[in-house]
Length: 472
Image (cartoon, rainbow, N blue to C red; front, side, top):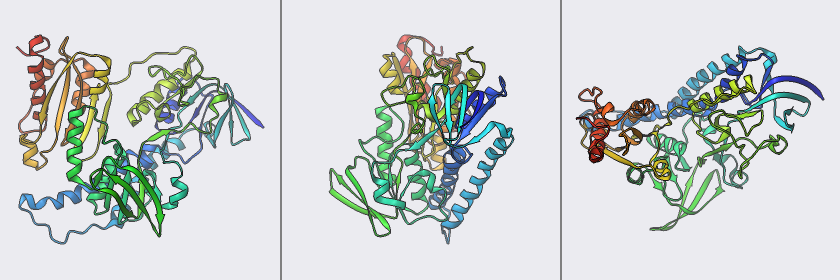
């Protein structure tokens, strides 16, 4: 077996791996990046960008559908599925091309194509014919979709994951979507708005990432009026029938239900892509799920020379988090054993449904589980001025403040364009702003941000008896 010696080996060339490579290369040029699949990040190929392209088309169709409410008649409305998907694939290829250009700029000696696995601590085997002796290793293998056991064999090409959607040359007639997380919600609503017959299936009644019981109630009430939704489908089974898929489930009100679709889209989350790495030979600590135990402020696994970043660590599977973790892991791998601790940014998460969902800072569940003494302020968009002007007056937001000092701790949002409100709140939380600091900032009229001011004023009233962090 051929053998090479390197200072740093990075397994995976997604967002985290590319960031790790750039950071590690500032310390050493003796490094390799090992990638077993096609180059191009999850975001560019099958995640953030292609899904937003589909959502943009769906939003345009929905705007036309709702134009009569503004006194505007649109004649001859037609959705050309082939044209919709042609634009998605065309722009998708453009985004992937940017990533490929970056990778092509790396020295050829730094790129290894193939499957990596551990032979021993610090030793990787690539494609069973190359031994890589690495002083430090960064695991940035990303994640893979969860698929119910046996379904792939039973349903064949009628079972798809979000990766497959963006290879369509046209829109299908019908899709069952299994999973009410971010991917399931975004794609189900987008396809529904583009004229595809959709049913969204969930288990346990939860929908989306929001954790505040009041916010969950608002989301579920909205879903019931937005698209066909079975949020607590019991005994769900699927089987192939002809050229489609039949889904059977039990509904607590209507009993056993049966519906046929062209495809079943499995969107029940993603799991770290660590199988096949033979981590048991890596000499690193693993948790009960086989995930390496690591410090998120150093990305170091235990006290070893292995680091982990991005979706592979099952921490916060978001592009900006993966890029940050990759930079931290790459820097520390490059300078090891001089490992630095770095503060992480305030958590920020956005779901691009309409209304949007977002979280900034600590969630309701995190604050509750930590025993924090906090109060909340709320604002509804039902009668919010700008929201009503746009005909998008749905949703509610909640902001959490510390009872001890009035600092903003977190927020959960559900409403129009809350991606922007979530950013403002995340920045304020990261700066350590109090409620009075936030209320001292300017608010224009009429804008969606006035809803944020209403929630902050409500939070100020809730904290007033503590007389901290409040305007005089």
